[in-house]
Every structure is written in C-alpha cells, then in structure tokens.
Length: 382
Image (cartoon, rainbow, N blue to C red; front, side):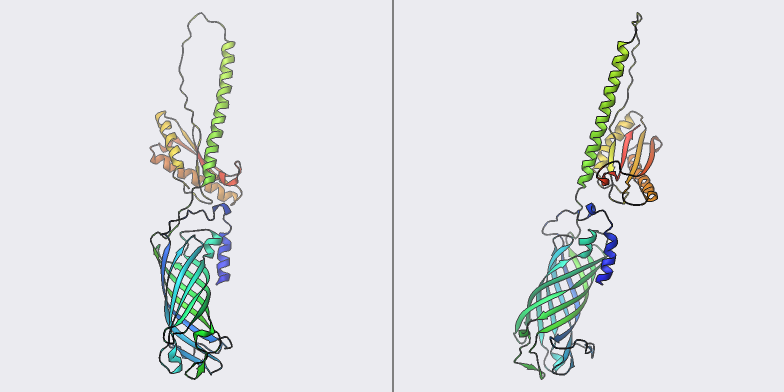
C-alpha cells in the first residue's frame, strides 16, 4: 500500500513547488473529525508464531496453538476524536474495546486501550493539498494505556499503522486501517493462568479496521493569496505606466520641435481637439495548468478598463500566456487561448460587445521572471 501511495504521489510531485502548501491556517474549531470502526485483532506473545494460522476458528476470542505458542483472535470496535492542524499533520485520541476470554473457556475478559496518535497525511505533505482528492494515505504512531476492565490490570501501549480514507463527500469518508499495538507484559498478569495458559511475555496485536470518518464544522482549507501574482500585477502596471510616460515624453519633444520649425502664418489656425484613450494593460493571473482565474480581485481592474472602453467605443485586445518551462508547446498554446477566452467571457459579462474584443494566444513564454508570472492574460485598450 505504501508503494502504491508513493507511485501516486510521485505524479503529483511534478507540480510547481511554489503551488504546494498554499493554504491558510484555520481556526481552532475547524477540521475536527470523529471516527467509528469495527475491528478484527490477532494477539500473540513476543515468542509466539503469528503465522500459526490466526484465522483458525474466526469467531471472537479464538485461541490457536498450545500453551507455549498461541494466537488469540478477537472482534471489537473503536472510536476516535481528532483534529487536523495542517493538511498534512493531525492528532487523534483513539479508544479500542476488545473481548478475549472466550478463547480459553473462561468468562469474557474485556480490555480497553486509549492511545494518543500523531497523523501524517502523505498525499498532502508530498503532493500538496487538493480538496478534490479521493484517497488519502495517513501513517500514524502514538502511545497510551491498556486497561483490563475485569482483571483491573493496566500497562503502557505503543501503536502504529496506516489509515486510508476514501472521500464520499465533504463530511464523510470511508476508513480502511491496518494497525499494530505492543502491550507491556503487565497487561495479562504473568502470575495468573487463564484457561491454563500463562501470559508472561509482552503481548502484541495486529488489527484490521473498517469504518467511517465524519468531519465536523469546516473540513477544508482555503488557499492563500497568490503573492507572486499580486507582485506581477503591480510590476506589470508600473512597467506599462513607465512605457506610456516614455511615449508621452517622446511625443511632447516631437510636438515642441514641430512648433519651433513651423512657418509663421497670418491666417488663424483652426484648432482641433483629438481624444485618445490611454490605459495601462491589466493582468489576470492563473495557477499552474489552469484556465480558471486564480483571484477574482484581478477582475476589478479589468472592470475599470472595460468601463473606459465602453464609454469611448474602443476596441479591447486580450492576450493569453503560459509559462514555457512547464508543458509542451502545443499544450501551452491551447492553454494560453483558454486563458484569454476566460477573460473574454468575463468582459462580456461586464457588458463589452464580443465583436469589440480581439483574442491573441501567445503560447508559452518566459518574458517575466520568476517564471510563474507568465501564467496570465493581459487586457488592454487597442
């Protein structure tokens, strides 16, 4: 199962590393969960042979072997309450209830274990958080106490295992858990024989559990604002303003030179006023491989530009880009066109006539640095 998980996550690791872990910290009351499971356990001592057929006579509390080499199987249930502090790191408190005594022709012996366990979501830690992911592989380890409810014995317990969850909805997931617990020898009093068998060695247990996870309150994570996109937007506007300033200075110099060299005229010169709309290009940014606008805030500037264009009956040019470092040239060409058309659709919603919009797909480029600045579409008045 770990091998399959590693293969699955190796594909996800191809994403841009800047896109990983881009989530905001939630409040303390978010990302809590409750788990309920039924379990099957195989108990054996440190000198026993677990492979001596623990499935023999499957019913609860079946003993296999003789006094020196025996394995006990048992059915039980577990409940757990936990919280994810990040998409990859969580804690849970888990209680397991088991019945064993039937194996030795004695009264039912009831046992309870309480464990505090640390959870590691490998998919989120390696592949980055993805709300739509169905399968999550979650190793865990922890420790706690084991209590004999009938014998009143108790001891420490170490636990480890792999929890697999399969998402059904935002609130519910199915569980498949493989676990291991190691008990201190005090759990089964070494001086006391149960059914003629002395438990004087450390006890161990392998468990298989099936159940469900129920998410409480907010169970998802919000992505953080794309700081790089914000920086690129600001820098793009500054560059555009600088270019316009340079053009304006050159035009002023040309007009000044023209006036200085103009011959004197006796007749009055008719003065004409020409209005030219000049607006800085606006950038709309996208995440890696996506044609969905990363931040709706980018569209605020697009709305202002659309308003100016409508008031002056101006044409608009929308140019889509992709970064040339990821994806093939053909893929980037199509992606840049999709990004441009996404912005065109937003302009149409703002009241701009589609016939007044020119679409350009520039494909993959590396004109801006860092490279993820190129995952954008620009909007400018023609």
